[in-house]
Length: 514
Image (cartoon, rainbow, N blue to C red):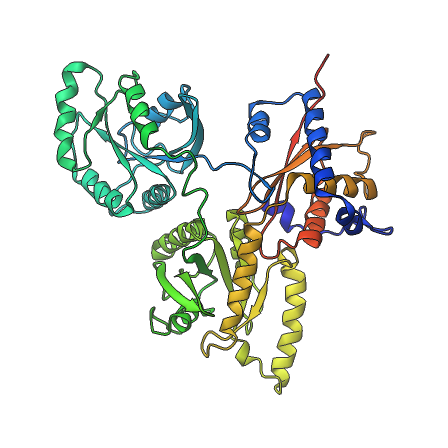
C-alpha cells in the first residue's frame, strides 16, 4: 500500500481528453447504480472465486444510510506468559496447524490474526507473544504487542500452564487484565488427563473465576471452552468497530526536538511533559486529555524517532518501539515538522510509518513564528520550504497542513478542523453502487492500456472497510501501479479523502472452465 501510494505519478498515460467523469456520476441515479452493481456482482459467478471472495461479497450488510458495510467480527485475544501453549490452543480452535509451535519459549513475537468459526459463528482470533514484566530488548516489544491485543479485543483467553501453577508473571498479567475491564476466560492448559484436573482447581486463587481445564495438544475441553465463550462473545465487535463519541486518539510524532512536547503542553495548558533544548528528552509516550476548539482530544506525546529502529541502541531503541505501539493505538497522527530546518529523510520515514500503519495524517509545520515576514532569511527559508514540500512530500499532498507555533500557541486552534477533516475521511464509505458507477465511467474514459496483447478488466469493486478506506477490485489481470494511483487520485478528486491513505487491493480471477 505505502509503496504504491508513495511513488510520484509521472506517467501521463491516463491523462488527456475532456473529462466528464464527475458530471456523468452526478447524473446517475442511486437506484440505477445499485442495479448496475448487482448485475456486475451476479456476473462474478462466471469466475473462479475462493472462500475469501464469497465471504467479502456475502458479508456486506446494507445500513440505514444505504451504504453496504462489512460487519466487524468480534475479537478474541489469547494471552499469557511464554510457553504455556497459546499457539497450540490457536491451532486447536482453528482446526488446522497455522501458528508455529515449538517446545521453546518465545517462538511467537508479533500479534497474528486468524479468522475462526465455532457453531456457525465467526470471529477473529489473535495469537500473541508471551507477556513478561520488566522485559528487555525484543521481549519488551513482544509484551507491548500483547498489551495492544488486550486493548483491541472483545474477550480475552488467559492461558496458564496448570501443571506449573500460577506464577508471579501470571499475577502481573491478572492485574493487567483487571485494568482492561474485558471479559476474561481463565484457561488451565496442559490438563491431558482427568486425573490432572485438581491441578486446575488451584488456579481459583488468581481471582478470575472458574478455570477451564483444557489440553490444547489433545483437544480435551476445548469444545466446552468455546461453548462458554460463545455465550459472552458479541455478534459485532465493539472494539473493531470503535464507535465514535469518546475523545479521538491523536499521536504526536516527529524527529527529536521539533516541538512535540511543547505542542502537548500548550494544548493541555500546563507543563505536562518536560521540554528541553536537549533532543530526545521524551522517552515514554505521555497520554493526556486536552481541549482545543471546544472539543476533547486524547493526545499522546511520543519519543522522537532518530533513525532506523534496527540501528538504534539502548533507551532510543525502546523509545521507538513504544512510539510504534502508541501509533497503533491512535486514530490520527500529527507529524510535527521543524520549518527552520530542511526536511530530512527521517521526516519522510516517519510519515511513511504513519502510511504503513493506515492512520489518518495531519502535517503540523512548527516554529512558524521564527520565519519573520520582514526578515530576508525567513523569506528565503519559506521559498526553500515550499520547494522541499513539493519534492519530498508529494506522496502526501492530500494531507492537511497547519502552520503553527507550539511555543506561543499561534494557530493551534487550526489543528481541530484539520483533525476533523482527516478523521471524517478516514471513516468515509462509498456506496457499492456509486463506486462501480465510478469505475465504469473511469474505464470508459481512460481504459487500462494493453499489456502483452491483453487488457485487464475490472469486473466489480467494493469498499471492504474504512480506517483507512480500503477498496477491493475483482479483475481479470494485474493492474499497473500507475493505473491504481490514477484510480486513487480520481477517488480523491470526487470524494475528497483528505487526510487519509487509500488502499486498493486486487483479486485477479480467471473465468471458470465450463
